[in-house]
Image (cartoon, rainbow, N blue to C red; front, side, top):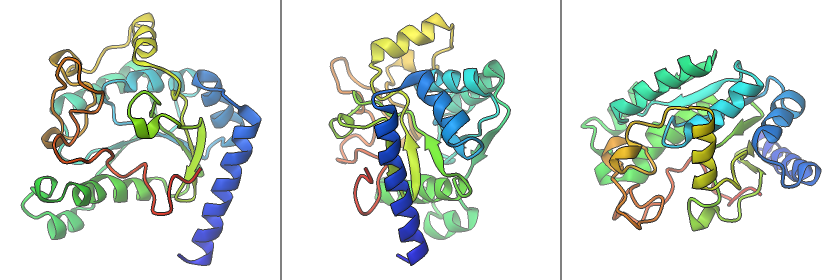
Length: 243
């Protein structure tokens, strides 16, 4: 790691710690407003999968500022329903800066010419199609909103509202929301559900690596089922959590 990158990571860690001290347990619309209008005005983006619960955070952001950039990673392996849901929510919420980011076609041809890297090495596939494109998309930003929640996995159970990773501050406005709160908000604002939810899909990612979740199953049982994989990689970094 060069000195500039090390300094940047230290800045992000220090800044995240200071923000946690300032804003304590704040979440939801209040956290979105402070981070986008005060702390990182013009320097923060929302990264959204337009998945099962994405409408809630997208709506919170749109209430504050519809021009906040929204980054959507199109891996070329997504469900068609997700792409159409992206278009529907963009129109419904009046989002003015939705950026669809795709993997580098040269790298795809070199590293996944047959399109089956997801089967042979899912970690490498996620790096190619999600981690690397997101890193490029976030260049020029100091912070980003994520949609992670504590209830989703045991690894996320201790998430703070503000953290850091890879030299950027990460803001988690929905950390304390459970599925009941998310659904109540969606219904209250008449937000359309992702079309695959009623078909048994709980957490929705790329089509080859997403299955339905059986009754009584855990939230992310349908992601990379049978592989032991829990995260795509965009919320992991080499030196740890970054908190």
